[in-house]
Image (cartoon, rainbow, N blue to C red):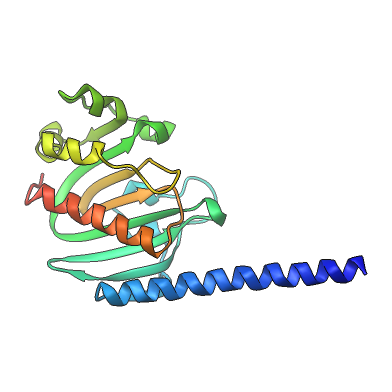
Length: 210
């Protein structure tokens, strides 16, 4: 009797997980259609090969990182790619804009989430003590960092409140790519918010390049 109940509960749990996966996929398909984009379940190549200019997707240990639940398409002069990556529930979500302009490297990250390997290089200080306390900034060219991170951009980044319980965000600019990354597997609503954030960041940058 107890064994039968256990089997029934396991079956119900399996069905519920399947339902959530199916709902998530359908929601992402709807989001892709609303944005004029397409949905793909899996990527065709590891992220470090897809985005060789971006250090954020370089694997530290274990296998290469691969994208899943991909929503991609075009927005004005950019290609847009939204996806989840990582293992288990503790994965990440990213929005990558592939732009016409090539730029130098600029890295912005909440100090709360800063990893030891990301501390390599000097932190660039800004007039705003509040901004400098919250964000670690590193760039190949300091002048490029100051051109991108204007007082208006600082205010925009300080207003960022994250998703659910997770507040940190990581932004990397390198080559043709602008990537925003959060440490949480987002649903369709989160995808849209991350896309809006990244697109606004790009618009505020204007035509600045290094």
